[in-house]
Amino acid sequence: DGGITQSPKYLFRKEGQNVTLSCEQNLNHDAMYWYRQDPGQGLRLIYYSQIVNDFQKGDIAEGYSVSREKKESFPLTVTSAQKNPTAFYLCASSPPGNSYNEQFFGPGTRLTVL
Amino acid sequence: AQTVTQSQPEMSVQEAETVTLSCTYDTSESDYYLFWYKQPPSRQMILVIRQEAYKQQNATENRFSVNFQKAAKSFSLKISDSQLGDAAMYFCAYRGYGGATNKLIFGTGTLLAVQP
Image (cartoon, rainbow over all chains, first blue to last red; front, side, top):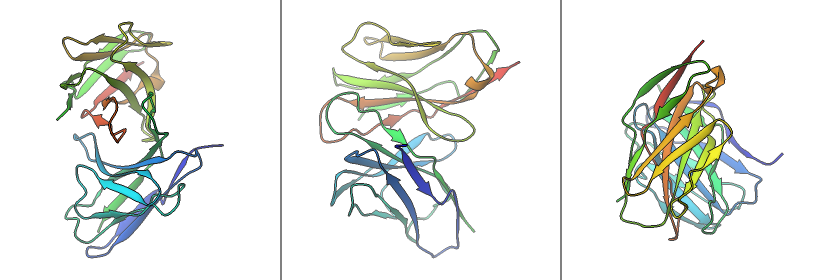
């Protein structure tokens, strides 16, 4: 079955530590996205990538980093510079072009800083 | 910059009744797409319905339909014959047409409760 997987489902981090959230898709989509979800704020875009080896900052990129070495994978690293990292993180992908190109979402990762 | 506003943080509906969720947006673009996503307690985001701005006909998907008012920049979602499984957070989202990204801009969501 095609889809997007995110791991782990729950992640706990101590202050000062970097952590990496995994996102893998087998939909053969070129574009991938990372969103952060906080209560009462909807989803906000962290980073996106339209193609392998290329990515751009979204609206709230500070304290985060990404890589796109493979089409299928778009890991997100939450660095110690992120002041308030506790949140729910969603990864999405979409095919390229100017049609509907709806975004397909993974199941998410809940990150808690202890 | 484009913005999406959902003015109803919470709504409640009786099972089998109809409910309408509101969404307004602000944009200077003439072509764009609008979406409604559902996020149940599992937190998996599911696309409910989508609308192209250049289409005058309102989109419909089974019990879900939209009222798209382009001049008023309004995009409401109507759920008919509400079911217990419709209970979820609903997000309205905007995407511009063209450009280098399929970036979605989300509203803050409406939490829908369905009463048996």
